[in-house]
Image 1 (tube, rainbow, N blue to C red):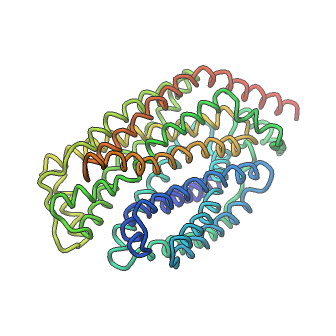
Image 2: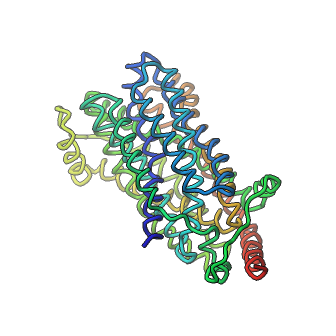
Image 3: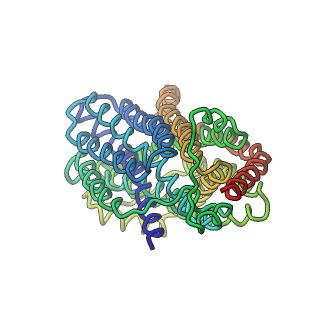
Length: 460
């Protein structure tokens, strides 16, 4: 039961970095107006949060290979909780930026240390399945953040959602106190005989090993894949803004458009729930062939691109919503539109398959980076790859603003957003190619890890 509790807590924790990132996009216009700055500067805030989170996670990941991880996760959570409360009382753009730097430093521990603890807790044969839940929860966090911003802010102000998230963070610290830290390498079948004898796996990471970890064949392609993939997914943070302009084009005011866009962003990500199935499917493919996980994921990454481009292009024609900004009635109206309005129904179908195809990436990427690295190297390997991930997301986020500025010379919203987001889908092609290239490295690296763990278990 303690293992199940630990898995539950860290899966829930995974949502929070994305809840905080998801809070911003629907509030870009409101915060910019309140702080008297251009909306483009809000994209910089979001990008800085992502980038600092990734940079700090490298150091947190290195520490996780040397120090008790439970202590680290409590310290990191205290940092981001305090920073979120300070964000909610920021009175200037500079204050907001500094508070988000602090938030990013704290959030960096969630990804790297959470991943390290989970991979030591999950039974080997369920690795892809449980990691899919961890990845899905992160996606769900983005949806929850977007919904909180869209529903709570219009009824009060933009600061309230950040205050609520801060209070929830304090509650999480209490949950950590009852978490039992798993033995390092506890889920690897090669070490089970060692652990059953009551012995410990005492290997820790050394600084001189870091370059070898980064340049390992599989890790190098996983890092490149994450970079290209996240240029595209980073641009998708602007989807609520695209929806707002499309809804306003149909004659609705900003408040109604904000609420409806939050709902649409959530409803249009439902396909991401299928990541559980794709994680399980990846486990099955990998059990038959050590190239299976990489080949499966490459196919779905390729498929993601045309589905999203079609989704951007389809208009929200004949959209029918109430004009009184009632959140519940707007939700009911949107659900009806998905059945009665063929344009909205088509958007929903395309979004379901696009987000489903995209969701195949996360669980299988996480499983691969676990399988090709030794237990004491996993936190660092994940953190370095996550840095690449976040650099891509940052570039995608900022890239929307740059490309949008060029495209807007020729056309206006929402067409400028449609063209911009469609152009940034092109990075899914090199992302899928990285999976195909890494497949042969996976075989050698996974076999080397298994061989080394068996040797260490026998030696002990």
